[in-house]
Structure formats: structure tokens, C-alpha cells
Length: 253
Image 1: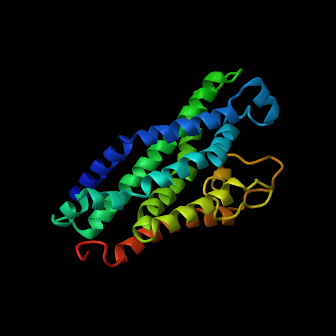
Image 2: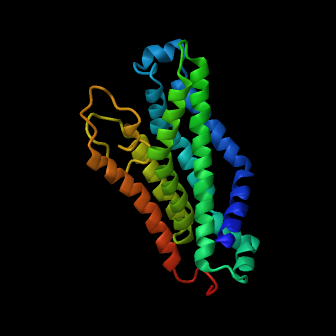
Image 3: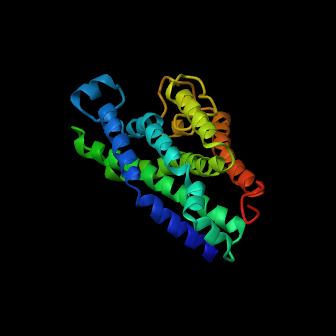
């Protein structure tokens, strides 16, 4: 366990030090504030923007997608970078096992992704609470943020981090970028409807609807919520397992 924690600490520190991380966070925040800032025009345009739950739902459902896919590209070279820098050979010659190395890399990526997404939503929520022209209950907003983290940000982070680190180590990086772009287009082009969202939605799926749902929509179908959860967590878990059983990945290279 100590070896895994050492890898997590090192990898997390390297990821957080990257200037591109701040760039992705700033770009996402700028887009989100242009879309959701509680200005007079936006309050008139968006019927439910006076509700903090709707603000968080909209921020995660629409704007978090930009940050999430930015992180996918930032995480896609974690194993190849180790190989180029010689870190992988150094670790492979140590008592660290293949499973410990993979676990450390993936868990560090998960922690990093959750940190960035949580910071993104938190910053936007703070700006919203300060800027709205009416009184906001801070305790309610804190509870809302905790709920959003559990039901949405954690599953999203598992999917983004595990898949983005594992699949490029098994596939041609160009194929991974193509698949990521296709998934982004599918998610970005989806328009919410009264029916259940497709299970493969990353940020705008039925998990996110547990934060807020349009009052005129049909009651939330828990079966579709579980399907969305299984897709996100399942893809992340499968990518981890596939990487563990992949040949020519460790000392056999």
C-alpha cells in the first residue's frame, strides 16, 4: 500500500503542476460564467436560474463537458511519458509490481480529475452565490455541492481518469483521440428531453438529473440512473482490468 501511495503522490504532484491544468480550468470557468452568470439578461433567458440546484445542474451538465474532455487529452500520455523519460524502466527495475504501478497511476489520475472538476464547480457556485441579486442560503449550497460531487462528479471522474490513462496505453493514440472526439460530439449535441437520457451521456446523463430536474418532465426513472452509473463506472473498471492483462506492458517489454 505504501508503494501505491508513493506513486499516487508523485503522479498527482506532476499533474497538478502542469500549466495546462490551469488553462483548462480557466477556459471552462470562462465559458460557464458566460453561459450561467446570474446577470439580468441570463436571469431573463434562463427560467430556473434563480434556483441554485438548477445552476449546479446546468454547470455540470453543459459546461463540465469542456473541462472533462480537456482533462482526457491531458491524461492520455501518462504511461508513454514515463516510458520516454525512463521513469517506467526505473520503476520496473524496483520491487514495485505491475498491479501497484497501474493502481498508482490510475488512482492519481482519478484524484487529479476529481480535484479539478470539484474546483471548477465550486468556483462557479461561489461566483453565483456572490452575484445573485437575492439572498442565498450558504448551508443549502454546501449540501448541494456535496450531493453533486457524490452523484455526478465522482462517477464522471472515474470514467474520465481511468479510460484516459488506460486506453492510450493499449490503443494507437490517434484512435483514442478519434474515439474521444466522437464521444464529445455525441455528448455536446445532446439536447435534454422529458424522457430518459441515453445511458452513455457523461455529464448530462440521468445521474446529473438527480441534482435538478425540470418540473414538467416525467419522474426520474431510477433504472436509467443505474444504467448511466454502470456505464461510467463500468467503462473505468474495464479499462483498468484490460490494462492489467495486456501483454508486453511491464518487464516483458
